[in-house]
Length: 106
Image (cartoon, rainbow, N blue to C red):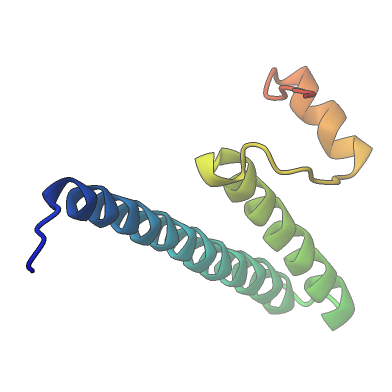
C-alpha cells in the first residue's frame, strides 16, 4: 500500500535546507577569514619589506595585521556568538575603551 506523508516530507525538506544553509554560512565565514587574513598579512609584510625593514620584522607585523583582521571577522560573525575565545588582555582593554565588548556568561 502506498502512503503519502506530505507533512513529514515538508519538515524533512526544511530541516535539510536549514543544515545546508548553515554549512554554506560556515563555508563563507571560513573563506572570508582565510582570504582576509592572507591579504592583510601580504599587504603589511610587503609594505614593510618594500620600505627596507628586516624580513622578520615584516613577517611579525604581517602576522599581527592578520590576527587583528581574523579576530574582527570572528567576533562580528553571528555564527560564533556563543563560542568561548581567548584573546590578549590588551585587545580586550582597547575594545572596552571603544565600547565594543560585551561579556555574556551563561
